[in-house]
Image (cartoon, rainbow, N blue to C red; front, side, top):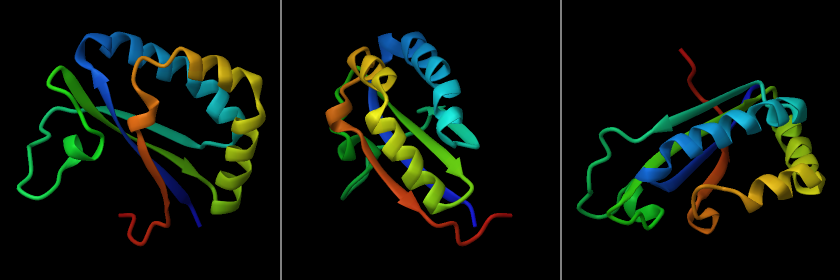
Length: 117
């Protein structure tokens, strides 16, 4: 069964093109590690909530846009193996040093699909 890893991050609006380049440059590496699908979505209609919301979850500043992304894997085991490879590959450290956003405010998690139509 497929497995999905989702991400939410705040990116300075001025860094949109840098973010797209960063994600595009990372895609082949993620594919090498086992990602079968990678989707990056730039926030367009991300309203403030009454109790909580995407912006609050990542402590987005006024000049930042919320980005929602997900990776799809063939299985949770493939995702776990990919994450181990990512943590030990020196190319990931290089990419981490040049992220066009504050990675400390990124939220992420793994999810088992329960409906895929």
